[in-house]
Amino acid sequence: MTELLDQTLASIVTGNHQSAAVFEKYNLDFCCRGKRSLQEACRENKINPASVLLDLEKIYESKDSGGDDFSAMSLQELSTYIVNTHHQYVKREMPVMLAYLQKVSSKHGERHPELLKITALFAAVCEEMEMHMMKEEKILFPRIDEVEKMYRENGSIPISSTFIGAPVSIMEQEHDHAGSMLQEMRELTNDYNAPADACTTYKLCYAALQAFEQDLHRHVHLENNFLFPAAMKLFSGKV
Image (cartoon, rainbow, N blue to C red; front, side, top):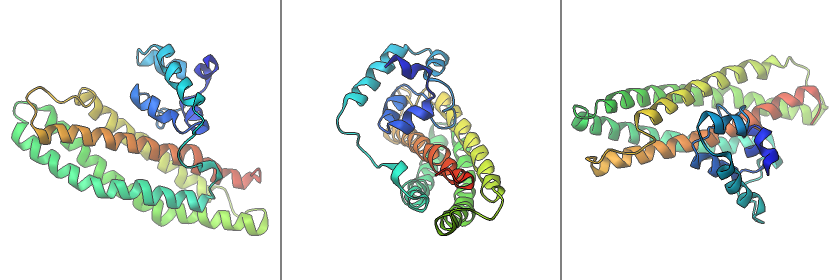
C-alpha cells in the first residue's frame, strides 16, 4: 500500500470511491486540493501516513466496492446524477442552514464572535453556489450533452474545444473559491467542534456545516476528476 503515498488524492478516490470516507476522516481535501500526493497532504496536515494507509488498506481489501461506478456512466447520466444528488442537496440545505446560522449568531454572537464571520461566509457560499449551479445546469451540462451526442453520431466533434473548455475553467476556479471558504469555516469552527456552552441548535449548525463540506468534496470530485476530463477527452477522440 505504500505506493499510494506517491499518488494524488484525486487519483486514489477516482480509483476507489470508498477512499473518500477515509480522507474525510483525516480532513484531507481530495477535490479542490486533490492534486497533492498522499504523502504531501499528510505532511501538510501533520498526519501519520501509516494511519491513513491502514484505513485505506481495509477499504481495498473489502470485496464490496460499494457505490456507483461513475466511470461507466455516460456523461449525460453523470451530469444528471450530479444535479439530482448534489445540486438538489445544496438547494435543499442551504436556506435551512443559513436561517439556523443567523438565529444562532444573533443569540450567541456576542460571546462567540466567530459565529458572525461563519454566517457571513456561508451566506457568500450560498450566493455563489446558486449562480454556479445555474451556470452548470443551463450552460455547461447541456453543452457536454451536446458534445457527447456529436461524438456518438460522428466519431468526432466539428467545433473548438473551448466550447467546453472555457466554462470548465471557470467552474473549476469557482470550485476552488468555494472550497477555500469552507476551509476557512472549518478553521473558525475548530473542525466543527462546538464550544462547551453551545445549545442544541448551535451544535446542529456545526454538524450541518460538516456534512455540507463533505457533500461538496464529493460533488466537486465528480466534476473535476470525472465529468470535465471525460468531456474534454472527447475532442481528442481518445475515448
